Structure formats: C-alpha cells, structure tokens
Amino acid sequence: MKPFDVIDVEIYGESHSAEIGGILRGLPAGETFSAEEVRSFAARRKSGKYLFSTPRREDDEAVWEGCADLGGGIYRIDGDLKARIFNRNVRPSDYSYTLTPRPSHADYCAWVKDGGDAARSGGGRFSGRMTAPLVALGGVAKQLLGRRGIRVAAYIGELAGVKGRGYADGVTEEEMISCLSSPLPMLSHTDEAAAAVKEAAEKGDSAGGVVECVAFGVPAGLGDALFGGLESKIAAAVYAVPAVKGVEFGAGFGIARMRGSEANDPFVIRGGRVVTEKNDSGGINGGISNGMPVTFRAALRPTPSISLPQRTVDLAAMTETEISVRGRHDATVVPRAVAAIEAAAALALLDAVLLAEKEKAKPDKKTFEVDI
Image 1 (cartoon, rainbow, N blue to C red):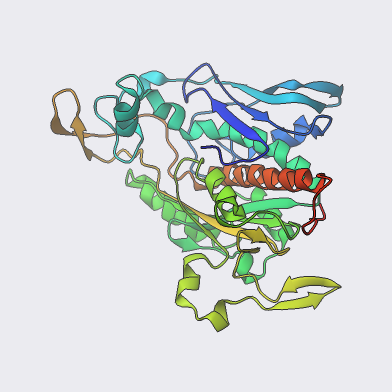
Image 2: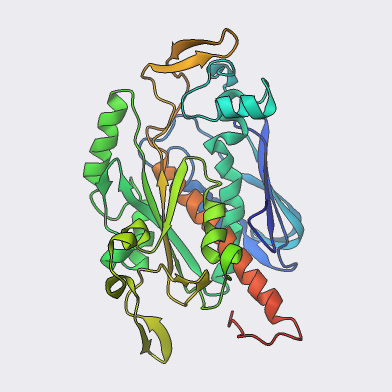
C-alpha cells in the first residue's frame, strides 16, 4: 500500500551496496529545484555533522536524472526524478548476522519473510543508510512547498530522557532553524543531553529520543476524513524512517489526560483570518488541516546495535546464543534523523498540496476551494 495519492516515492539499494537512490514520480513538469539547497539539507543527515554519529563517512552527493540542468545548479523537472547516491565507504565484512539475528534489528524478520539471503550486511534495505535518498528527495519537496508558502522545520525535542524546549513553549520558527547549526539540533538543555548520551555510549549502550516537526503556512482544507486523513499520510511517511516507533500530533497522548474544555482549541479571528487560540490539535481536525501550523512528534528507539552482550538465537542450530555487535554505529540516531523526518513530512505535505491543486482544477468542483 502506497501512502501517497499524487506522487510516488521509491527507495532502492542496500546499506553496503554500490549504489542507493530514490525515484520521485508525479511531480509537476517544469518545476525547478536547486541542487545546492538539497546538498545543504542532506548535509544535516550526514555522519559527522552532529555529535555521536557513526565513524562511517559518505559524501552523499546525489546525481540527478529525469531533469534538465539549467546551469548554476538549477534543474528543471521533466519526468520521474531520480537521485543516485554512490556508496564509497562500505565494509560488509563487519556485519554477518544472517543466522544470529541482532536483537531489535530486522535481521530475523527479513530472514522469515525473504529467506536466508535477505538479512544483508549492515541492515540491508532496512538500514538507516537508506534515509540518504529519502532526504535528497525530501529536499526537493521542501523547495516546491516553499514556493507555495509552506515551511517545514524539525529539531530534537527530547534526547536520552532530557527534554528541550519546543513548539508548545512558544519558540519561533527562526529559533528552530538556528539550532540546526549547533552540535546537537536541540533548542535547550544540549549539555545535559550530550552528557546523557555520552554516559550510555561509554557503557557500550545507546540512547533514543523524540524529534518534533512543525509545518508553517499550511492552508486550511488539506486532507480528508477516515483513511484520507492528513495525519495518516504524514504518519505513514514518517514511519518509513528506521527507528521511528511512535508518532503523535499536537498534544498527542497527553490529550487523553485532559478534559474537553481544556483540550479544545477555541476559534478566533486574528488579522482577518480564522485561527485557534492554542494548537493542541496539531493543526488538524477531522483529518483536515485547519490553517494552524501542523505539529507532530516522532519517538525514535535507541540504536539497537550496541557492543554489550545480547541474547539471540542460532537459526542454523536452533539454539540460544549470545552476540556482541561489531561495526560502526551511532550512539544515538536522533540528531541525524531530524532531517529524515523533516524530509518525510515534506513529501507527505507536498502530496496533499498537489492533490488539492488537482481537485481545484476540476471544472465540476463544487466544494470549498483550498487557496494554495
């Protein structure tokens, strides 16, 4: 099942294959994008940008196809857009867990689903490495959204149990963007968070966290009821990011502890626009955007590759055994996942926008028109 209605996203390759990449179909022909802007966005996902990332270094330079080079790094989209990324720093010998699956990795499930050759080295197609092409394509989506007045920003809301400031605390879009140049893309308490991750890493362990994402400028009217809901579309895209184990919108699970009088977002008129006094609904009612910023949080599990001994099984002998995972790994994937979650959200929002534009263009359209 595909999560999108207008666009289609295909990611191919494996963590240690010669090439990985992504194909983005369904974009309006004639739209343009800056490769330099994509490169700058992708740099946020690269190892070495933030603290605690894996020592594996890749340049993640995308080679673009399905577009025309207009010069100056500007490309015009002419068809299916393809981003090819070549792996330069592969070490598959570090990973051989086909018959001794790593706990909480996809090794065992891949072995069951696809057979003994499926659990490839380094996580194969399940690896976080596969978010590199996702970010490249999401970087294009962000530019197309920007021309429509929609900006997507993400940052770390919580890391290793340390909570930072976020949207609910009244931080501005500028503050969210400025933190991306810090050693950790977090709005406050970075020293405490860094110390907590360092403590886990020194013990051979890892840490998880929460990424918060906010989309500004989203018009009212995107999405639909039931399975066509905007929350469903965004969540489906975000769950494509490995390590994501939970997604909540607005006040999320916290809204279950409120009363209706507290949880409801009163409508008011400000500057001639209908807005809400607060935004516990995360900018979405009934699966449809209400014109407020769309906000959600994604919970990411601790990196399952840890050097501590762990119990597993030997699938050949059908006995229990113990392993310590080798290789190059992030003590926490959260800082690098910020760009990946931002990219996934941008692709989902772009699909919702293009669907609204398509519906608006119908000559027999009689329902409320979304002003895109």
